[in-house]
Length: 463
Image (cartoon, one colour):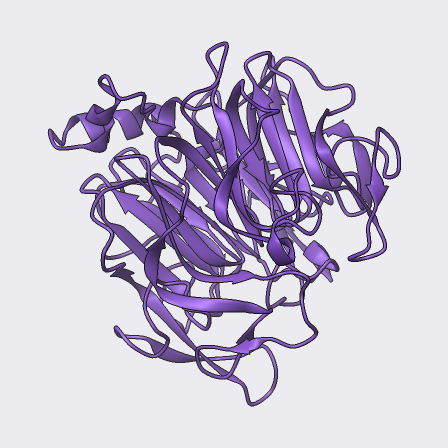
């Protein structure tokens, strides 16, 4: 159902979708829950202008204010501060039906579906119509969103998370650390959640964050990666393993405390999909980095070589992407932006996630879901001059090309293998990571914009 609201003094649009438990279901984004008034006002809930200085610059400024910051780690050790990598904008993120942004002062603002407290607002507010500041988080430099939770990194290198905790995605065991009980997605179901941000114990050196589905990964100042929550294990069984209260992860292991990902060292940037993660690792050629991935490999989204049981427990360095400057990950696919400004993708291509028609360009048959996949990175058709890249759990990826236009491909409501220009956007400076069909970013004039991959909601400025 789509609901449009209009008035002479306000141009606003709203989208309404049925709530989905996770983004791993290939029925995907039509099942999202959201209410996104967006229009021409350009003001936040407190009346201040939503336009601010470039958030990429804000990240660096926040780091510079802390003499112990991990940004200093780039001196002589090959570490590249995440803000310098032309991937997803670290200060923007959207999940299933909600979105968050970091302002220039380090405050986090969220809006949209609040069924599990994922906007950081009281649970009585099922929908938060306008950006509202999340209490308890200050000095934020980056934000990430999964299906129904969000996490922020602060300039002090701490990580705070809020929202659904059924799969321990907040970094602690369900129903602990102040969790409360939320109504579930079906009658009589209850789930643990927390609208109040809580610190993830054991994380003290975070400089970047990534999330998808029900898990989160943090990049440390020394280039190592730690993750927590539940990641799908493939081939996915029909059932799941019990974790949390009243729910189950889709065939994975729920880990409440951060664990180090084996094989990650010297990492400059991370991206995670629903069932796997990838990192840009120092040591590439032509000014780029190598790519190392881990997790489910049933569609070749991690490595061209098979891992035991299609699950790569340790990061596997690829030999075919040694000139990478940015990464994007979706449900079962990965894309890499090279120093030549070309995007190359590999993994599942059932709906054109790799940027070419399924079954072409070397695609192989897929025993897992009856579709197609490709283990070899293949250039996205008719896309060049890319300056920024982001992917999401909606089986889609988007890129900003020269001039600030946004091109997306994959599941855009219908399979769309060729990059398609998103209409109605001003020139964009960056896009945030996304875990559904809603994508948000910042225009070159500093204003915030969001759009739905399927055209609902259409591109419009966030009020």
